[in-house]
Amino acid sequence: GTREGGFDVGARVAVPYLLHHGIREVAAVFLTHAHEDHAQGCGSILQKLPVGAVYTAGEGTAAYARSMGLSDASPLLQKFHAAREGETMTVDGVKVEVLFAPPAPEDGGTGNEVSNVYRVSYGRAQFLFTGDLVKEQEAKLVASGRDIRASVLKAGHHGSATSSSPAFLEAVGPRYGVFCVGYGNAFGHPKPEVLRRYEEQGISILRTDRDGAIVFETDGEKLWLHTYAGS
Image 1 (cartoon, rainbow, N blue to C red):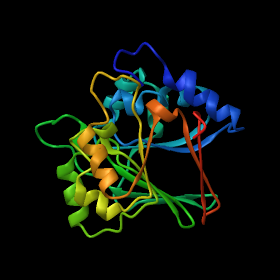
Image 2: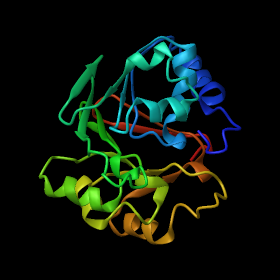
Image 3: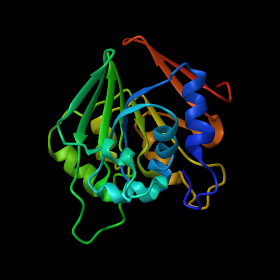
Image 4: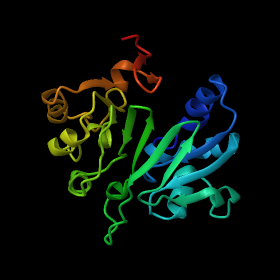
């Protein structure tokens, strides 16, 4: 989604993509936090496709309703549940784990501090999603001793300097790091110093501003990579 609200990424990108691949219903949606650029598109998915459940962080349902343009009285909000740390869900052999679900800070913070961390696994292929999780929360997750290893890491906070600490990258040990960033974005993401951290640890970098859509396929053993730009 976009902060300006002028482009409905759910209706114009996510739903057509799902329909193109023959997906007519969704068992569950997992959202890291309520910011529009992470949650807004879910509104159109809920309105256009049957969805079983929506798992959220701990900001409260009203924050997600605002992000998605839903009314506080929308019956769709009954599908929303705050994810609990340690929860797992398996659909057709694909496992989704809630590795981290930090409570909302008392001072409200920026909203990034509450980002959930999900790992999606099929066989030996693992994909880690951290939303906009900040480095202070990354440190707590590493210190917990949990196994957070993954084949593919969706880079935290779009490659902002607030995230992707060296210790966290070492603990995850991904083969690929995927940066979801808009071309020429005003934030300057991904930051050069963050890209260097990935390079120093031998992580292959993929960027949506250069590669377009990035798709991984797996049989549980091998990974195949396809990008819109054809690399």
